[in-house]
Length: 504
Ligand code: FAD
Image (cartoon, rainbow, N blue to C red; front, side):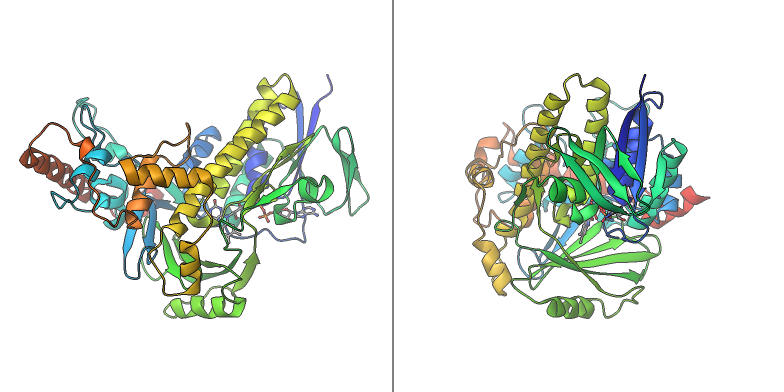
């Protein structure tokens, strides 16, 4: 039997994530997989924060988590702390995992909404084990006592986490994995792409004139988009009118202290900046709208914010356009990573989309009987996920109360897709949001953002969600939950001690 040939172009995070997933999942007797990486074109060098489904990737590849974390300068992440997004001086966290404990007939969050004003409840974050752990600078993996009672609340079992890491080291780590799994590695530049109306990509030509053909090509060539964008002219749907930030100025700095287990997102004059703490350094970047400030102004604003920090490298400006290809899988070419889509990094979703859809691709190869149908389903699912991420990102901006700069005033007037507007309408009326099934960000995430943004600044009380209990009983209910979370979190090691102990 002739082996099927798959050629991946690009050796950034997307290329090596895809290579390791395909090499792990496809039988080597049936597939021959190669990866071509330019020795001259650098990877984008950012992409350091993730969300909890990254754990599926680690598990799928059978990686040892401790080894993984150590080799990639990794730290753990319980969520994102937002500062100055709603109003100057205000902050909140979008933490992973569940909030509070549901009662038999009401969800915790609905009860919190129903009583927050009348019982003067603490902010939502006090009821989120991940947020409490993050702000206490503690870390542990989730745990449940062996004699756990099904009706008792165990906050430590609700600790969902993700990773923060050095993007370059991640690619290097996964390269090793993929090479050990038998990937053919070619270090060369693709200088020509030959297309065919029926099949899509016929071959790529390298600097040494070698012509490489394949049954399938995976385009991981970064923002250039060598195959789907450039050679096959697939249409890119830009979301500029919804998400106007189109540049980032980035720099790495030395750590000032022990790394905290979360990412910071701090609103600036014309966008926001991230702070991603790794084991010995911090990743920083200011995502901004070039319609509102120049590169120089952005650089100055970032450098002022980082005056106390020692720089490790030079400031670098990266241009991007938020949006997605309408057909990331077109004929025999599949675009993954920056070549297929760009989600501005506010909620750390790009790497997630790469490994989710690399796994989908692997499944299509294994289980698919009609590849045209597989491509259609792949594109539909990708599109649906992309739109739901897009709406969630816009919700952060359009709900701001800030009017101190032209950027933030414009954000209040931002176009809103119909889908997002209907979520906001429903939320205002009922406190609930009916999200599409399988949404990456569940209701609890939306609630943390909308409450954090002080979107319900009018004192709306959703009394329809009150259970049949006295105020006194409800007060005890909320206090017990907050106390049990704080007590259990206090028993955990600090984030840094956890990392150090694992290293021993
Ligand atoms: P790249 O890293 O650009 O790699 C492209 C590869 O293609 C390189 O190896 C290059 O050599 C190769 N190549 C290009 N042309 C050729 C050629 N002609 N021949 C051969 N090889 C070629 N994502 C997250 O999940 N979390 C974040 O916190 C996050 N932050 C981000 C911040 C910013 C400012 C930006 C811009 C992105 C961020 N992302 C984030 C996205 C993340 O960086 C990318 O999803 C990820 O790094 C994948 O990039 P890539 O591999 O597609 O592209």
